[in-house]
Image 1 (cartoon, rainbow over the protein chains, first blue to last red):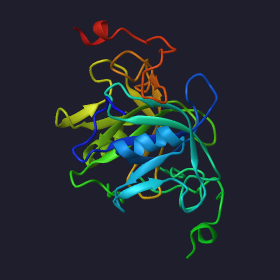
Image 2 (tube, each protein chain N blue to C red):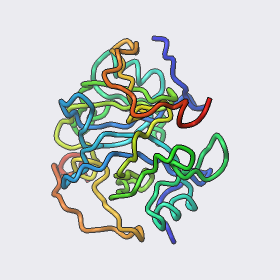
Image 3 (tube, rainbow over the protein chains, first blue to last red):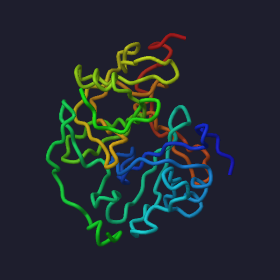
Image 4 (cartoon, rainbow over the protein chains, first blue to last red):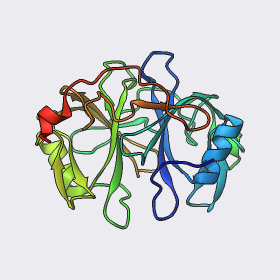
Length: 131
Length: 131
């Protein structure tokens, strides 16, 4: 596929992942942020399951390959500059490796101090990933 | 302020900006994606108006400084890796410089072709920014 997007010098594009809302405009919870390269984007579109480029591991990363917590693509959007993607997904269980639904579970106050977390975990990371 | 975040080698951190939802968990529309450095984050927290680091212009960027379309901070979150920020904001008029409410107005199909845009513009960019 020929993508008319602006990738970084490293061949990557930032991806915002949002829970599918079913509304005319996306209004679900933001679940995570990650990066794709062309190959991971091709695989995502071909298979319908979110596949990223793991910068830390330097390889393709099918979300849920270990945990089973896959993300099925519902809709996707590109931004006005064609350098950021937004995916709406159906998230199996929780998105965050810590066990929370979203990676953005930690609210901060105006001094950047953490506030109490107002929700529970969706799964036990130790049971899911091993120790 | 001492920020316990992971900034890039360039001293930046990615920022996802979402319309404030009023719900226990953020569920507004994603409006835009941008970058902050420490100084822009300090200004954002001190003044309550979203201030970014413009990578293209190499300077601080108070969102709305030209258009008047400012973004007032409502809540903010850090992700599990402490390297991405999520801000809930009250957006004045529209966030996108093209006139749309959100920069993510362009939906794509599974072949990455653009779908018809199902919404109108919030403002006229030519009148707001000049030609």
